[in-house]
Image 1 (cartoon, helix red, strand yellow):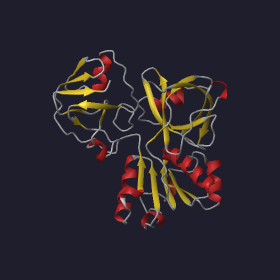
Image 2 (cartoon, rainbow, N blue to C red):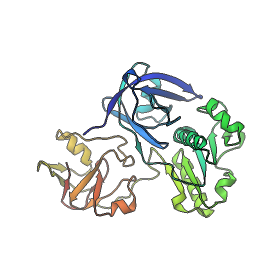
Image 3 (tube, one colour):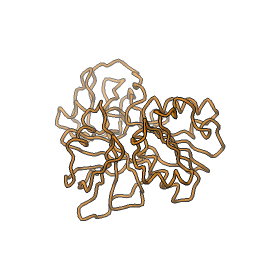
Length: 322
């Protein structure tokens, strides 16, 4: 059953030179489903255009969701639509919040954001501050005036809990990373969000400094690297367990597209194997996993799920729990 529901664009606000934040509310300002820092929603911007955006701000506010979108010169449609077409009063369909980037209990937390990666980390900083837990937020942008949520972050800056680095002034993460990353302290966790190269660099340096992998958390809305190809792109068949219906999946076509071409509804969002929206249980057959959202343990577990948008089959037939 779909968990999508309708909201109204209650306001659009400039956040720095290149970003827009969008406030979404339910009709009559009814409470929205609860969420925790790190969560994201799927936003149906128009038919055929669904994008994921992190929720930001205070998770304690129950009557509105806030998202923030950067203007992206390489936009596949979502950024351009928000910046050029979206207007207050418009109605949008969104999903219930999902969280693949949650805060875990820790003695202290270091948050590293670059660019629009500030959106989930601002929510984390707000939650940690409200709980009285120690944290440090490092936020990197190109130049002054690019900062999102600057008035809100200024309080943390004044308290010494936030430092903003400007690459135009020589304060780039490509130079020296913060001391709290270069030396690991037991019980501290690290959260990183931003461009793929930034996250990869921070992760590699943290691991080199002795950080345990389980204490490093990253989130990206683009894959860091192409998912590994585990088998040939040959044709196969999927069988729908509940109806017995069969659909051929040609070489070079995704399972999701093959199902849609046969009139079968598929929930999609990122279409890159990294959000989990299209994960579907497989009851028979061997999966050629190509997603980056499931862990190695999940991919080898007794109960198997396939990302319909990117993964394939190692066997002539896969049986889906549909």
